[in-house]
Length: 423
Image (cartoon, rainbow, N blue to C red; front, side, top):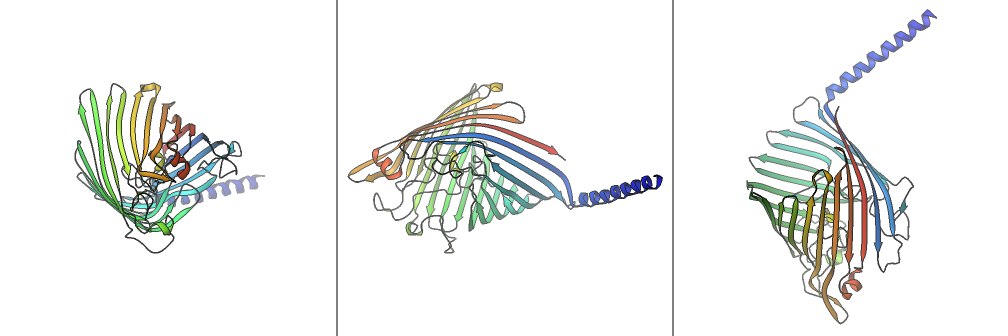
């Protein structure tokens, strides 16, 4: 018995020694690891009028686990890994694409490595290689589609430089991993420069050369003014869409038969204010019509296929693609911050075409209207509640006949738990 005990003790000591050696080796490779966990359950309801599909009911859960760490003890050398799973666990899943015959909710069950990259930072310069979430400016052109349970990510090589208010970015994108289990192989180039002159003026210029689709060349100005009781901020942006510089004859983003002339313009201007907990604003956005005039469209209207589209033109997602006649969106915002009791924000959209919609002998540019409202409440420091709804009302008869723009109701109930730890 004594021999057996001594052998067991020796084995345990050897195991501890081996584990200690492995831990020591691991510490030489990684340092300062940080763990991030997110669990986001959400219920979504979709009802589209005059549709042959049943109403959608979806209860999905997003689970994300990410780690950031230093590498090999080299200052500025870091790695990031993140895996994400979306599942309905076989509970409430009456929605397409999980089941046929129902309205669509773009949150199918899937698992993916959402981020896996190495970065190096030195004296204002940062280089990144790998898979990364990317959000530029307000995500109108390049975004991560963070609203959907599975985000959009980019496989890229990027260089960033920061110096005294100047920020420069250049990236070469080889693949875009879309929110649904699909990807787009590409050879797109993203160029972005920003300079903050003063709080009242922040200017960005960009050229997003999206392979086999179009170039977006634009300028954006934002700023804020503190007028004692009232705080104002504004945005003004113009962009021009032209035929693609990066064209390698691979499968394009859209039907190649209609991409022979992509010239179109984009405008956005907005003014917003906050006072005593109240917020209000007005904005106007134009995505220009395809070249050629009504009924004679040669190319695509102004489209931003890599944007976080849910954020713009109404949460009912009726305009994820711009109609060929273009889209005008007049937006009114009103909200109130209750402090510890949460915040409520509402938007009202009036949609119209840049040109009249043609349908038989009728002509109309009314694309409908929409009311959106969201209530955010922080239950604890790490747990948040979101109640959100969107009600789209159809416009003129031609819009319904040409684009299928019919009355739509969507609402969501969501919890979001986030955990961060220095390991």
